[in-house]
Length: 290
Image (tube, rainbow, N blue to C red; front, side, top):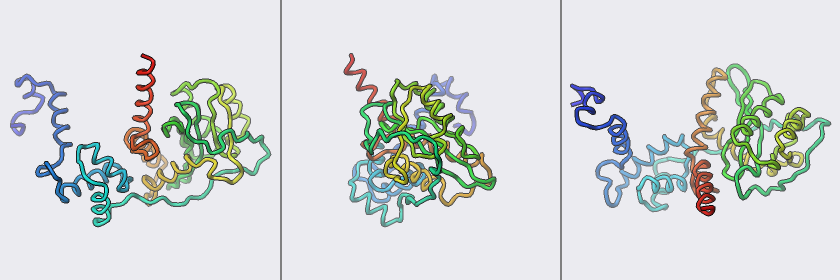
C-alpha cells in the first residue's frame, strides 16, 4: 500500500501515530529472522552474529557476543557461539602495541602516586584518569587527550588538537569538570608528562579542587585502565584506516567514544555499557534513600 500512499498520509487515516508506527517497525526489524523460533539453527545464530559483529564495529569476541545475543533474547550456549565464530573466522580486532607519547624529561614538580594501582572506586567522581595518544593523518599528527571515570570506565572528557600542548589536556579536563561537577577531593591520575605537570594545568586542578596523582616513571601499569582504553580504541576504530584530514579522524574517534560509552559491553562491569552501569548505580542509590 505504501507504494501508492505515503506512510505519513496513511497513519492519520488509520488513526495511528507516526511515531507509534515507526517504533513498531523498528522493534519488528530487531526480531530474529523467520525460522528462528524455539531452538535456533546455526544459520540463524550466525546471521545474528554477523549483524552484531558489524554493528559493534568488530569489537566483540565470543564472550561479549554471547552476552549481546542473550540481551536480544537469542538464547544460545557459550560454546556454540565460540565454535560458530571460530569456524567462520569472526573475531574481535586484536590489540596492538603503540609508541609512547609521554614526555617526562623535565624539571617540573611531580605529584605523588595516590592510587597505587587501586583502580576500583566505590562511586562515580571519586577517581578519574587521563592520558594522551596520537593519530596519524594526511594533515599530520592529531593528538587526543581523554579523561575517564574509573568507577564506570566512562569517558567523561576529551579533546583533540594538532599539537601536544597543555591546552590539550586542560580543555579535556574542563569538559569533564563542567559536565560532571564533581565534589572536592576527586583524584585525577595521569603519567608524568610535561602537559600534566605544567603549572597551568596544576593551577587549574587546584581551582577545581581536584587532587593530582601521577604514575611512577616509565611504568604503564600504574595507569593500566587508560592504556587499555587506548589499545581498544586503536584496534577497533583506527588501526588499518587512513585519514586524509584531521576532521575525518575526529569524526571517527567521536563516533567510537559514543559507542563505547553507550553501547559497548564492558567485562569488568558485568557486561553492561559504562553509562548503563552508572545509571544502575544511581537507581540503586535512590532506592536505598527512599
